[in-house]
Length: 308
Image (cartoon, rainbow, N blue to C red; front, side):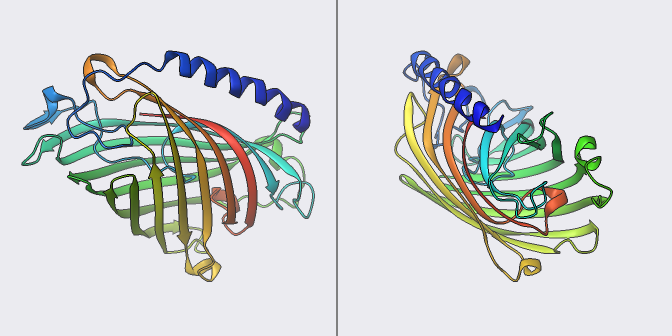
């Protein structure tokens, strides 16, 4: 079934790419100080205090598997917590639903800069494509309040968030030996980002201040680099590498890499447009999926992501 799904995904992805390319029109009026990632501020909201702003000032991370974004990816690799004890040759579908809602922005000294407060919510789910009914394996629910800042190419994101994780019912019914963790935690994240032309680098850390079970790490270090060939319009190439490390795994890094195309379409009345990302991805290291946080996994895959 996984082979049939993989072969059927190829024409679907190609068709989506063709349709998106046909719909991608030249960008009209650029938003004020729009960075390469497509975030930016409309001229009507560029200065002063704006309630419920429509746009964003912090660029989403390309390669972070837990970045808030809607996507669907086909992944094949080693997931040893599934039926095969080795976990090798396993195919899963990774699905995300995410959205961000602006609450307040206070403009900086120049147009398109300043502070912004948002609320963000996401669901990350994984499905076993080797099971007869494509069993739900794990679902992570995340809600957070990010405070972001931008000044020219420099930006910061401080985020307080909650995550809870749950195993799927069908997965739990496979065996009495499967142990479900009552997994939830609150964490505060700080990321600092600098854009220099086509290159972007970021780094920071998280501190988990309430966690269940106690085996969860209490801190995490996070860094990455990104490359974009142009502004967010029509088509551009992009790539990113994201690294996370914790003491729980003896500082062995979780490495996520993505490369592909970003297709842009102008938004209404000059607002940043909708983005479609077609990405190939690779991952190796501690699992980003909540209930399996103690496992090491690896995979390669491809997916379609929807930004802004």
